[in-house]
Length: 356
Image (cartoon, rainbow, N blue to C red; front, side, top):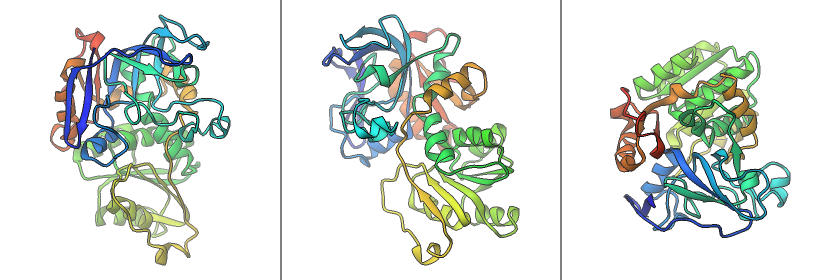
C-alpha cells in the first residue's frame, strides 16, 4: 500500500510500505476513505516530537471501512463505516476507567502516527478497536466526520470544558486555526456573552466571524486592548490558547481576568514563561491537556443532527496520492488560506482543491 512516511525532521514521502495485519485479537484493519492533516503532524516534521521514529507512517485521524477484525473485537465488523479516533484506549487501566483515555497506560493514548504507524495511508491497523473506532451514523459525510477524530473533541474537551465556559462569559480564543475555530463553534453551546477571536491571518479572522465570533483582532497589543475595552478593563473570563507558541500563551495569561481560566490547547515545542510574579495574586486557573475523546459519541450525534459546522472548516480537498502537495498547502496556510485539508483515496471523482 501507499502511505506518508516520516524520515526525520523536514523529511517525509508518499511511498510504498507493507500492508498492516492483525497483530492482537483486539485489532481492526480499516481501509481509509478520508484523512486530514493536523497541526501536530507539522510539529512532528519540525522535530518537535522526538518520540516519532523515522519510518513511522504519520496521521492520527481517519474515516474508513472495517475490512478485518481480531477475534476479541465485538463492537464493529467488516463492512462497518467508522471514525478512527486520534486516541486509542485499552479500556482496562486506571485512566481508561476514568474516561481519561489520552493517558491510557495499557498500550493506548496517542499512539497512531506517534508510536505506531498512523492513518495517512490506504489501510491502518487500529489497536483496541472496540473503544478506538466509532460506527458512523448514516448520512454523515466522510469529509465532515473526519474532523471529529481530533479537532472537535480536542477543542471541546481541552478548551471549552477545561476552561469552564459558562453562560454570559467573555471568551477569548487565541489562534483561529482549525482548533481555534472548532473551539469557537463549541463554546457557543454554552451561550457566552461574547467570543473574541485573535490571530495574525485576516482570512482566519474572517472565518472566525463566519463561525460566530463577536469581535476579532490581530495578535499582540491590539488584541489585548480589545479584550480590555470589551470587559471594562477586567479581562476575559476564559482564554483558550490554540496556537502552541510561548508568546501566545503569555498573551493569554495577560488577557484573563482575576479568577478566570486559561485553557491551553496548543502543542508547545518550546518553553513558555509562566509569570507567577503577576499571576499568583489573581486566582487564575491554568489547564493543559491531551484530548481524551470521551465526547466523540456526543459530537457524532450532534453532527448527524446538523448541529456542528464541520464542513465550513474544510478549505482544501485532495485525492490521497497528492498527500505531499496537501502538506505543502497546509504548511503554508498564511499564503494558501488553508484551514483544514481533507484527503480521500476513495473519492477521486468528488475531491478537488477548493477555492480558499
